[in-house]
Length: 548
Image (cartoon, rainbow, N blue to C red; front, side, top):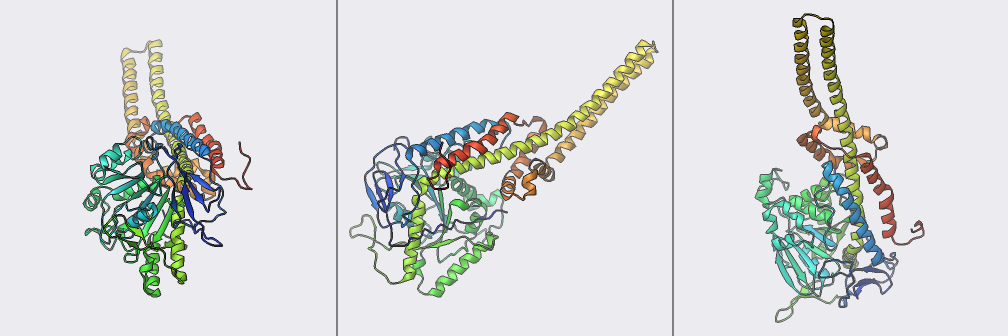
């Protein structure tokens, strides 16, 4: 069963706050040499290319530990990303050959790292985007204000593009969203903004989640395609999963008014964000709206209770309780700006501010996370394809074994008939006897061929059942089964049903299997190439091995 957890990544500091400073295309932590290179070319959307940007500061956002390890050099970043792209592209022909589980163009990433925000309507997603970017980009409000997936990217000047232009752009990397249909395409937009604090990565805002009149008890009463079309006009959970799989950081927002009671939010958490544990942060925003401590306790307890319905574990993930600064409108219009921080002796409010800094710190790590997530994606893809190939090979061998048994029976029948015919001719037996032997041989071989053909149809149906595929999994992964390897079991759960449908629809007689050299290449990537990439992408530490 899929479940969601969250890294407990509260970055606490021992002394005073340490701030982000952004200058010359790099993020500096407390004016140290700790950098996360974040330059990119506007023309090619390549975030690893060299370009000097105007200096800007984020002095009031994000406090992080000054003892964090040094970030990876930009040259090594590019080497890692290029190598990952090359290795991923090298496994796609095998994926096509054996009709593997990897989606078409899954080796193509987005042009820039990005942070994906999802949550209830009016939970503060748009306000958080405006806060992090340092200027008003999204419209914020209590009621639902936007029904589009909005990609916000850095650029030399402000400009907007509609969904077809965004998805049709060959460089942005969102072309695969076409699979969700025209309704989604027309509910997607691109905003390019200059002079923003996040000029090394993109942010993607999503429509606020709210239950439709067709839902029952907070959870969808039907999982049919018709109910999905009635709700949104497209597969909303599928789109959320598409973005979440490619995002480098995923933020799930709740607010005090609806602390986890929106059924669509819980459904998305269960079905769309499963397996995103390493990059998912759950945020309870607007916590400063509580006037009494017991109101906060009730809302927090309600959120935990609702999360426990979709997270079948004793340990709940960390919930980041935070708030954003109040925003004031300048006279005569113009851009809104946060009010100056008012000194407060409230330790609770200070904790909310610190938690906000923690969340911003994780958001600012998106460029560095892109490297880790790319390697993780490659590792995940190779594991999926390798298991798919091994089980297909096992099923094909069993099918071929039965097929050859039947062919031997048919060949034996023809050989016996031919021998009897030759013997009758050699011994000058009556022609009628010889003709009868020939007729019996032809009819027997034909009848046996028809019987075996029907039998092979039954064998194929039997081999493609869930039970037989599970038996194949146990035969091909005996050690993992005996060791109760949870990772291997989770990979199997992901490919089992798609594999069964693919085998059943294509037919075992037309299904190709991978060669031994192709499977060995997958093992080589897992055992040699990916560990090498991990070492290149990891900061130096006392336990690190020798660098090649």
